[in-house]
Amino acid sequence: AQSVAQPEDQVNVAEGNPLTVKCTYSVSGNPYLFWYVQYPNRGLQFLLKYITGDNLVKGSYGFEAEFNKSQTSFHLKKPSALVSDSALYFCGVNFNKFYFGSGTKLNVKP
Amino acid sequence: KAGVTQTPRYLIKTRGQQVTLSCSPISGHRSVSWYQQTPGQGLQFLFEYFSETQRNKGNFPGRFSGRQFSNSRSEMNVSTLELGDSALYLCASSWSSSGGGSTDTQYFGPGTRLTVL
Image (cartoon, rainbow over all chains, first blue to last red; front, side):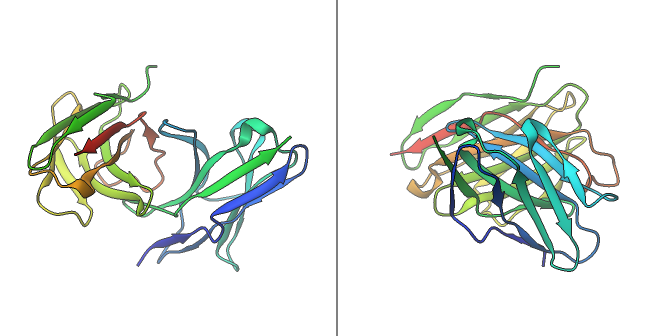
């Protein structure tokens, strides 16, 4: 069965510090991995995806994610967090249909 | 390009009623998927439509149904509403292809907030 796990319900980071939001996956076959962000009362916004190729994927708003096949992980990162990055982040895998993690709430404090 | 639009944005119904939600995909996108988002269950896949045919289905009861029109617009219907159906219903569209779209990016609408009293 395909699945995605986000082990942290919440991540707290100070503005200007680097941030990491964790994601691990389990798929039979090639993993097509995605990150989305959701602001209050809004739909999900696409940040980035990994299909194949370079393990470091760059996306919108300065975010990037590192695909690690041996650890079956796809962690989202940003070198310097902004208060405006505070939101709910979802990792997902597309295996003919999307399977999403439970979401991680990111709090960036001034 | 205009994004995915969903109507209505907010809806209040009572138990036992039925409801229809509408989704207009991004122009040129042929696949429309529906999701239910609740605080307890997270994001759950309902179904996907491609070229007016249901291509994938999640684990929801038959009270949840959908359809897609020739212009790719989609509707989902929930009959005999229950309190537990209160949720944010999200629609997403993607370009996709007839063979499936595992590499496709889905673009989400703002959602319809359904409250069942």
